[in-house]
Length: 234
Length: 211
Image (tube, rainbow over all chains, first blue to last red; front, side, top):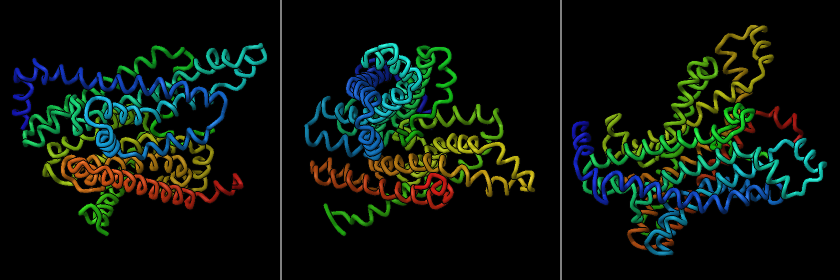
């Protein structure tokens, strides 16, 4: 099997053309970026606002936890059956799945800002918008990035499944190979998407370290993994 | 109970078994590994990043890797089960280590002073005190498992996910919706059970907070 896997990787068809590995990787990253950016535009401001005003906290916790139980495959299939084929329906499903972790990250980051610093800012006469943007948001960066990272990895995984509803990307190798019992292709695709996920995770981790101010770095390291902070404490 | 040409009861039982058993097996494996990571900084430096990397691998990729790694047949439900065991262990190793870290040193040293042996210390003192943090981790693992089981339908493993794939082939949204709702309800039911179990095992938490 290993030999056939090497053969699959070394075949010229895997390295040029629209179904080659580089093209599929770019496709996969394209879907991921599109969904994560749309979800971030919705979830991050909303989460920050809720964290600042503390209005709708219960809703954010409920939505974040509730959406986690959604089976990705079912959501993808239902969106495609109801809205039709093409790029938009699966992308909307990916956006829906990317929102909860980012919403929770932005909310808990802003809500968890040092109350002393927030009070001091208010005492100095800062407006609420200034407090949010200059005090709370900077201190929320580590948790926001944790949420973005988790959402991105979830989208990469779900985009793989989305090959079932006609999307391109790396899931194509796995599902197409599976349907014709071409197992080297299945494994090759699985290997590429696994490596891609780990590389993206490492890049986002590195980015997180880069944009986190020095004293916060230890905090970032100690910060609970977004997966395990299921209940966002108010 | 039959609907959409399926014995729904059979699909529900398959779904529950395929999600629940791996979480239990994963918990049993994660306890000693987490204890090891708690005791040894060297072990932690290896185990925590390794679990992080495993958790990162997309489910569909992991499901198709398993037959090569352990030699199971390519269509076996074991591939889905083992994938979920791996995710559960990956998630819980860190949970267990952090839960044990959170047990105050004064408590463990006092237990040693009154004569607890290492095994008694772990099962009688550290583990009970770690239950609240551990329960939170198990609940995440359990909810994800109930949703991820459905991915197995893509490689022919029966669960409520079968309603999703076959509903797609037949262009029958109600069938897909039934699969989604069933899967969510099962996830919530078992989530509530884990929560209740965690509370039942830690009566002192409620006594202290007076809730």
